[in-house]
Length: 384
Image 1: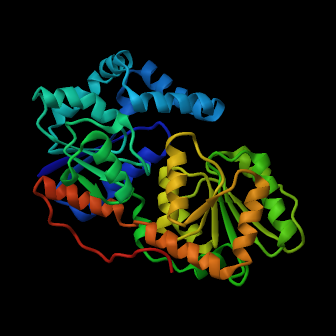
Image 2: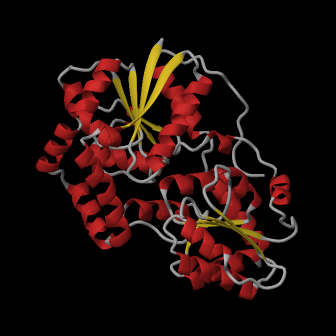
Image 3: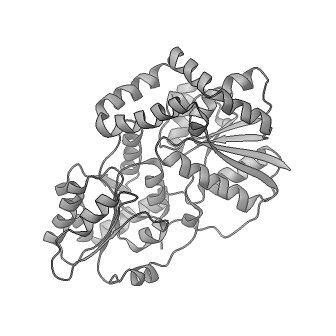
């Protein structure tokens, strides 16, 4: 039996979600392959893990300009000191990989290639190293000559990887960014709308809360109702219960519909029920939105990688940026009052989306290790 180790990293949620998507696709499509999913960050020294995860969150939330500088500096050169610390802190992770003897290691976070490169170069680990880049851009932290194959979001990312680092074109596969298997399936929006008591004839806007403070989200929702009382709103607040309560308490005009939800695993269904999605431009969020064929109003971006994601969505004609709650209202209302334009943007999103990315990565990895007898299923591309 062939063995595949999927390695993600819990600095932000996107890398782990992509890893889980690839793991699930491998299990479903290649049952003859033994699969394990490891969070590399959790295998580091505890002090390193704490600083790595908490430091990243603090930088992007509290000091975004400082994070932009860190992003730009690390894209130009690597730090010998920080690299040495990472290698020391990750020694137990490397030992675990050597003990498990995987035929392939599939990385959805850039930490694993950094930790494994020297071991592979010295011949102390005989495995194939695959990297899944989880944003619509490249960055120096992803590049290691020891990576056998890269899986990227688009032709543009493939070109940047080749032109910037000299990676041979045959080592790059344009698959899209892996998203959950639910996005490969067609979803009828009518039952979803009826489940939430939504009128199928009225417009529905889905807010995804990542990076949204309660005040701006409330202001955006109230602003929509000032223009159009018939707009139905679903706000997914994740595990932020304080945010959910504040959104649920938004004063609403007579007849207005608002569902303030906590953590849900039905994002695919909620996107199917929505006419417009308002969210920040995380790699997984944008990929899910495009896979569902939904026009996207980008409410914010972490400096660096998420700005590149926003650029990709806007360039594809699949979304727009909105820098303030007032602009969110203006963008959404313009689309809703111009159905032809809304359909055009949705078509661009559908064309840009790659709902089968996880399956494609799984098949290519399995083929690379000689275990490519996949369990085939129906494919679906885009939204109805």
